[in-house]
Picture 1: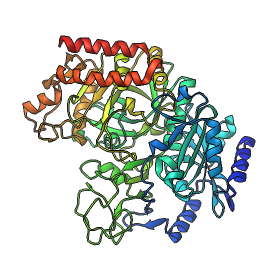
Picture 2: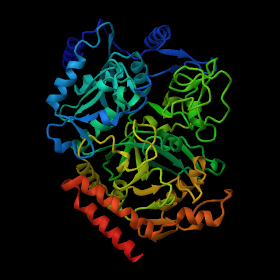
Picture 3: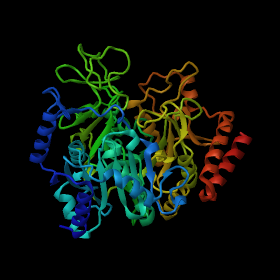
Picture 4: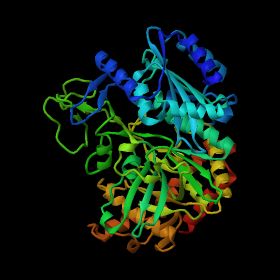
Length: 579
């Protein structure tokens, strides 16, 4: 046992004063015991036998999503947090929230959860230890990470770990804080039991703290999917993609190709987090540090993501979905009518008014159950990245896909991406906001320094990935979707693959390289030529209206914005003026 770990656990025990301390081993027996206790006290509800090992959890109505307004970076210098993060003085944070932690676990069990992010033998693997009073968090972390002895073994080899202290507290939004201390690699979370606020290995460690580790150590921690595309003949490429939460990362990562009979197949490596390093070969290598999926349930169906339904059919936790009287999960967009006697996400008889499942209802499922899981999933080296995708919900202006001119321009594309907000966070939905690299809520330091870090990584790459922007959500003037999406997105991936090979045709536009209409593989897809042309259209007037918002965002970043990105904006304005 690491002396530093034991000392930290002792300090947390002295602060929180639990009745019991339990060191989690991640075993089946431990999970069965916790599950039985939670069924008895009503924390969990058993689902239908056709969902073996699956249970329903209902969170407090005030605790259903990430609380970005209550999430803080507690750096010693406020400028290091930057203008896109909430900042709190670390001494104030320890004093203010330390008082909330004082004695908060009386009558409860303190669980010590050692966990490993990444494959056991990976050079990028990192150990975290979460202390929590929530058995729901324990079961969820068992799914989402490599938990137990494997983490302690890694800890013994180098002694380093990221500590995280969590308590559900009173579940009072006015006494809720999610705190990150980047210099100390420390996480504190109080007052929430919801996924990203409470599963500290997820956004808190894997992105906010890991992004600081990556900055200091020369690698990237990103809010991205990771997928494998196999072409006819067995050629494989690996693609990472950054999309804001609830914008289709999971469905793209688990895509079932309608062209599989032709040899075009997608395999899954991850749907949410990617850690990337520069390899000795000058390529960018990536892995998924997680061991499970924390997916948005509403909208998931046999049409949109059949692999997700299969993955979550066993040994999974469902949170805030609706349920039939006999325990069948249901949510809006699942693909079949609600059964009689449906109970809504709060356990009340559903009257048909308002959503039955919460819009941010989730499933937590083991990655190894995914039928499309890539054989490379557990490779400790990771996989070499050939393409990076940026994308979001844009109803106008942005074409179906375009390619950046080079790495620096690609960083500009990622830095300026915007998307309509969703129910994944407690804020107004369907509002267009800048979300650079889909990292706005997750970057643990100054966004200007983050952009510079991306530029620096590019200078170290002798074989950089090509960078693309995709938009599945373009609409016509009547609000109808122009692109069918879901499995048909593989047709865009084919164009990307052919661009990597140097074969696919593209037209140069002010914003980048856009497919020519005849360069997309549309055989078997019923799409009228005018619709395709609208999908690929780049209107200089619309983009000229876009640039003031980019400039406003850059000015918000301030003096630490790299000069290269200002140069990229001026170059875009020049191209648009002449276009």
